[in-house]
Each structure stands twice: as structure tokens, then as C-alpha cells.
Length: 433
Image 1 (spheres, rainbow, N blue to C red):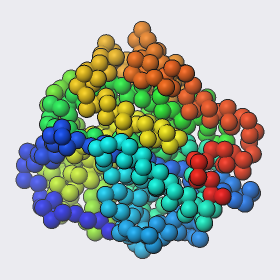
Image 2: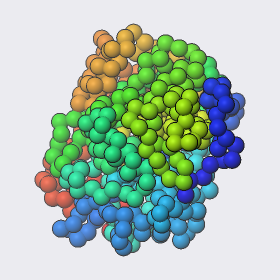
Image 3: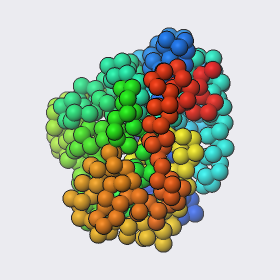
Image 4: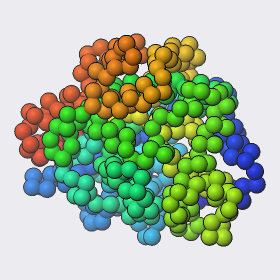
């Protein structure tokens, strides 16, 4: 099922409508909220011989059965070709990623304590369901067991189109789709100037955030030598639509700049009763000008296209913070208040932006390449990321010990015993037993 507002199904008449998509989303500061989304990597918890195996969609222990468990307790299923692919529950949504990663898109809140309370309730529900189904959910941003080919693909139509497309534009796109998991924070903006300042701050510190939240050091059953394999994967997934955007540091007319960039990013597909691939390299600008297969570009197409762009900070009707590995529940809960403090407070935002203000764009790109491997030890000009992080936030920055460091130590302690590793890596209450 794909729902589109009637007004958004009307063909776009002018470039101004694309800009208005962003401009009309502005809110006064009194209405600003923060939302958190996180994806969990699941596996079978038992028997010991099957521990660590990724769940299929089908079957009594599959992702479909998990959706069915939640649906019996309320919510509106989103069904595609007979398969539930999401569950809408009031202002939150449960969804799946291509490799069965289970995602909670929590409702945006004005008080981060509310999110923690609701996250606790969700974990309790997921724990109950997982014990019944024998599933465990791991505190990691990359499936640590097995190869990519071991992972079943979920029956979501758009993923089939992306699966065919990814190998044509990068070497790691399929790994991104089925193996990785992230935590994101979504924030409001007042107007174009405010959005520009917030995005500039976010892009200034995105590598610091990646280093602080790094939590994907294990790949294919052994330490990779990296702090964040997830971040490394993103460096060659699809560079036309991912990474760091130079104009964020150069332009204040961010709605215009982002629109011009998005117009020239190739489309994945259009949706008309199903996801229809388009020719390679076919951009939204071409779609607006020429149409495709008798269809004209609509605002619904524009919104969908924006959702298939993956820069470190994504602009839609809100700003998405996208550079962090998923990890422990305390770290999942920490992202929203940290970003609220940095982006909603003008003084903090200015100070955070200044931390890397002396870097040229080429230096920022080099840093983004270095951080997945070096983490807090990566250098940004005269300073390490760890030194800059101590100015940004305490906790991990003070100890210098990341979730990735802790995970490698845990991995070595359990010596490759998958059953014990599943129990050790699982979130509290989500070990499936």
C-alpha cells in the first residue's frame, strides 16, 4: 500500500513548488521537536546450532510473524503484495530494512524523557514478542555473523529495484542495504536561514558524531580493524546521493541549493501502483521536463525522490542526522538530546560549527574517509577527533573507549562461540530467551 495526498498527486507546475516543499515546513521555535529512528539487527537466538542466523520474512520465527504479533495489539498494517512491510501505530511506525533490520520510527517529542519512556515500553513489547519467536536483537550497527549472501532479502518492492541499481553506482551498496543499522535524529527548522545554519553545524561535526557512536567493528565473524564498518560502507555506496555536500558550507539559500542538487541526482524509480524503474542516469530535472512513460512529475514523486537521497544530513520537511551507528539503548537515547542541545541552541550551534571551521572541503572528505578506521584518533587539521569531541561532549570522549572497542573486547572474550556471542551482544531484554 502506498498512500499519497490528493494534492501531492497533481503534476508540478513550477520550480517554486519544489522550494515550497521545504519552505512550508518551517515552524516557530515553540513547536520544535526531535524524533529518533533506530534499526535493530536481529538473529535467531536458539538452538545453539542456529544462533546468529538472520531471520527470514516467512515462517513461524520470521519478520512477518513479528509484524503479526504487533498488529494483534493495535496499529494499521501497510501491506504490499500480501506481505506486511510496516505497521503504523499512532504517530510512530514499525518498518523493515532490506536485510530484516527492524526499525522503530518514534514519534517526535518536545521532551526527550518522553522518548526514553516510550522506548522502554517498546523494548518491553519487542522483548515479549522475541521470546515467543526465539529472536534476539543485537546492539551493533553491522550484522557480525556470516556473509552478505547469508542474509534473506525482505519482500518490499522498492528494495528489489534498489538491489538491481546499487551495483551500478558503487561497490558497497548491497552491504549497506542488508547488513547495516543506524540511529537517526530528526529536527525541525524555522525557515531557510535557520535550516542553513543547522545543516552547516551538522555537517561540521558529522565525523565527530560518527567516531563517538562507532559500533560496527566486527565483519564476517572477525574484527575488521575498523571502528565503523557501517560508515566505511557508505563511502562507496552511491556517491551521487551520499556523503558530504559542499554547498552546505558555501550557501545560505539552502532550500535552493539542496533543490538544485536533488534535481540532478538520478531517480531510482517512480511509483504508479507499483515501483517502476527508470533509465540509468535519469534525473528528476529530466523527469520534470520530459515526463516518463506518459507520467508527469508530482510533489509525491519529489517527496519520494528526497527519501532516496542519503547525505550525512538530509533535508526533507525536517533535518535528518544520519551519520551514527546504532548501538546500546543508552546511546540510542542520547542522540536526540545531544542534537537538540547543539542545533536548537544558537550559541552551542555556533561553537560546534567553529570546531572544524578551518577545514577545507577536501580535508572534510579526507576526514570522512579516515574516521571509519581510526575513529577518535583521526586527525582534523591540528587536532584529533577525540580532542574535538571533548569540546563537544564528555562521556565517551573523556574515556576514549568507544562501543566498537568494547565490542571487540567482548568478541575476543567469547572466542567465536556464536550462541554465547548472541547472548552477550543482545540488548538487555532482547536476547530471545
